Length: 114
Length: 114
Image (cartoon, rainbow over all chains, first blue to last red; front, side, top):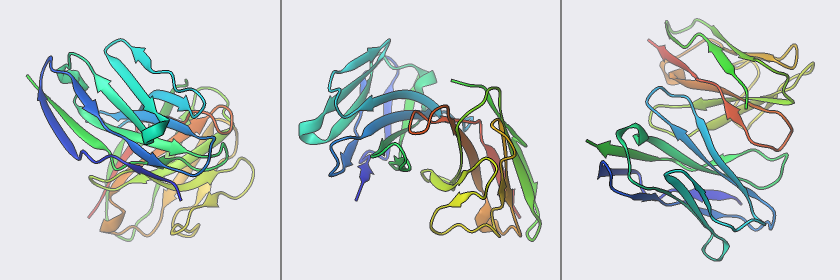
């Protein structure tokens, strides 16, 4: 069975600090896709990144970076120099096959304190 | 990505009534989905909205309670029927341009049932 675990329910950091959100996934399939979404207080879900299982290269986009480690089944997300606007709930998600549904983690609520 | 709109953005309803939520996309998409997010929880897939045929429902969701229409490649509706307070949630539609690719989400409809 497939599963996504976001062990951090809630995190608070002071603005400008770096913060890492953890995501651990479980699947026996060799082909799968991993996602991160951001849900600000407005409620909409904003797509951040999609990564397939064959691409372990880490990705950086501005202040955001992602560390994909197949050896530990983790896909962690780091925000550098956090800002108040980064306050949101962040969801990690897994999709095993293209026609399978996306499985979401329970989310991590991130508070950036001014 | 695409511009996805949902109507209404929020509503307060009385128990026993029904509400129809609309999802409109500004370009043709292959797949459309409906999710429910109960307060403080993760996302749960309700069904896949199939164009021109009956929706495909996930376990625990039935057509009588959540009838879905998808008359074309840019529009879908979800009806929440005979509502109870337990139906109070955010309802989100999502789309895929190609099956199995990234899902993009609408802004959500916040529903409160009294």
